[in-house]
Image 1 (cartoon, rainbow, N blue to C red):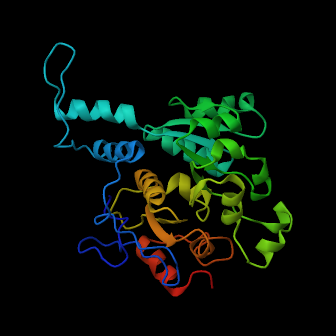
Image 2 (image 1 turned 180 degrees about the vertical axis):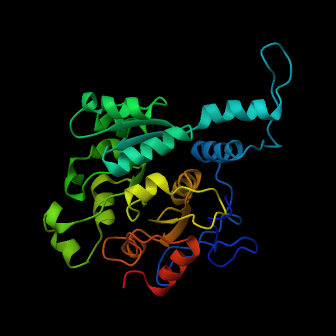
Image 3 (image 1 turned 90 degrees about the horizontal axis):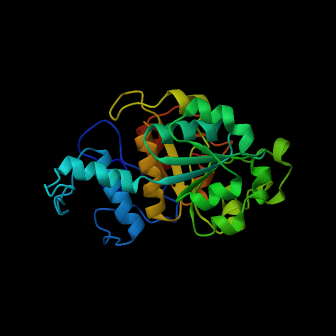
Length: 298
């Protein structure tokens, strides 16, 4: 597991960025990837191989294999082959500022990406041509069915239009925000008895992780930085499933930002929804952690 997405109780001993620390009041168990029993699922094996190959290393336990002419593959050649086989299929529902920016990033780092909007694939020809890299326009249902990871980047008020049967049990990244003036008043959200992410999760029955909702789309487009650079921004992440959050954290890191675990989808999600101190803030991981520990919803 990448170093910058670790347990809140084991601070990093080198570097300038602090570890991810869920808020004290959160019910989410702290992330302890180093101690968790290895997950033998196909998806986890693929994600681990992707991370290893993307970082330019080979797995010492993996057999070298042979080339077509009987020669042995080098570690780099094997890694290239595994990377091609295990890059994620990502479906994006919503082609506005956030959806199209994420499509651009994910295509750039080599993922297999499809994108949809509410008006139909034909209306996305210009965007697809501009981004290139194999990006394909599809319907919302096709995006939901195709993606191993599905990004929902639509106005919250339209979440009931999502193809729920295609999203059931999938890893869904929720970038949505509730704005009563745009989406219409929702009494349960107005009185804070629940959150928009909890309502989307209940509607879709997806394995939902909230991310990319608190960053301005221009910062998402332009402010990606290499690891360790002083002005690298943090992106808060909330969710119940630690494996799902780890996958999303990897995507965030791959496009040049630092993931910070805000906690579960309820309490944690509140810490980076509109009206919170994290919403729209341009902060480092350390600064973001400090706000979460202090109670970012205040």
